[in-house]
Amino acid sequence: AQSVTQPDIHITVSEGASLELRCNYSYGATPYLFWYVQSPGQGLQLLLKYFSGDTLVQGIKGFEAEFKRSQSSFNLRKPSVHWSDAAEYFCAFMNTGFQKLVFGTGTRLLVSP
Amino acid sequence: EAGVAQSPRYKIIEKRQSVAFWCNPISGHATLYWYQQILGQGPKLLIQFQNNGVVDDSQLPKDRFSAERLKGVDSTLKIQPAKLEDSAVYLCASSPSRTGELFFGEGSRLTVL
Image 1: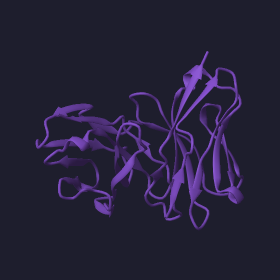
Image 2: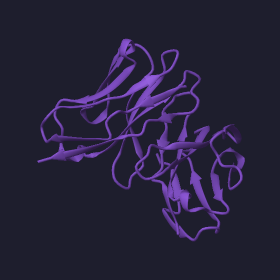
Image 3: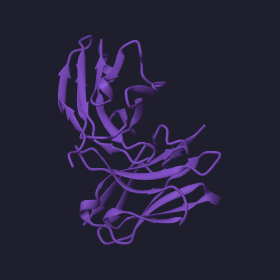
């Protein structure tokens, strides 16, 4: 079945430390992959997307993600976390027909002082 | 550019009552989505429209949920009768055709008592 998995439910990072959120996908071909962020009481905002080409993708707010076909992964990274990054992060998958964006279960990021 | 508009933002009803949510997508966006997000979970696609036609409604509980997209623009999602497990945030999103990027509204939070 086509799906994305986010193995970490919660992650706590100290402000200024680096961050990596994990995402694994299951699909027979190269999917379209996305990271969205949801702040409390807000809708979802697209951080970055991968369709093809360069496997290291730059997004907004200093985030980046790397597509690794051999590991079926699309992990999100940020070199230095700010308190305002505390939010829920969702990895999402879409097949190459641009149908049906499927979300993972999310990872809640907590930022400690 | 105006974003995706949703109303109402909050609704509290008793079980077996009915409720309707409205969504106005970004102008010119052909694809419209309704997602259900239960607390602590990732958004789940309920229905996807392409213009005024249904692309995917495989996860819409059709015995109680219905949705329409009038003239290929705004959309209404209705629940009748509501159950306790329908308590969730209902997110509307729109997308230009075949880009994979969804723009989300702030959601409508439903509480069923």
